[in-house]
Amino acid sequence: MGTLHHADLTDLDRLNQQLHGSPRERANAIVAAARTGLPHAQTLLGQILLNGQGIEQDQALAIKWFKIAASQGDAMAFNMLGRCYEHGWHLDKDESMAAACFLEAANLKLDWGLYNLANLYATGRGVAQDDQRAFALYQQAALAGHAKSMNLLGRCYEDGLGVPADAATALSWYRRSAEAGDFRGQYSLATVLLSQGEIEHACHWLELALQGGNLNFLRATRSALRQTNQARLRHFAQRFYQRAAELGDASDQALLRQFEQPARSAEIQ
Image: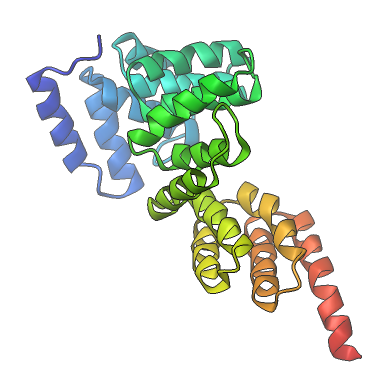
């Protein structure tokens, strides 16, 4: 199950050549390919329907296409069904079902399936909490080149989760994650470098993390940077607050004002 025949590969190559236009053009190409029965295209169609990218958003229809593709053994379709169950996207939230879907994707060697299943084992959601199982899954995905798994594998080594603590190996995996472009890995590497007094090197990775980080990441990390008395890091803290205010809502803007208020008061004095 899940093996592509030569004709499938030809169709997949043809589809990939058509995915460089506007969102609407891309959606039209995906719809046409999905209707021919190409599982990869069916999964892509589910994804754009889920988010409304170049096509009217329809989460119910997205679920149907994911199930069609999964029935043909498409690993990413199983992964996306797992995400829908995990977050309750047009399905009743069911972390046990999410784990079952991620397991199907993981058994098909999909790095995202391995990563998402590892997250459930690490946190005990839908499965019994198991640090060793989480470590093994993160390791398998990281060795396949999955940047986010590299970062969390580093965290396992740093904190001794499922494996004996090993600071040097943790740093190595953080570096690999950072160099592969994961903003959380870049931040993890920066924090270790800061603890070693390598301020300039750390600031390089903080800059990249700031530019690539999403709102949840910015909200989770801005307060930690705020605690420092080092001028360069205070500057980064302000920029993390500013970027969160740009991407977020009124609460993020209020926190930015609170952060900037002491500086303004000092200027007045």
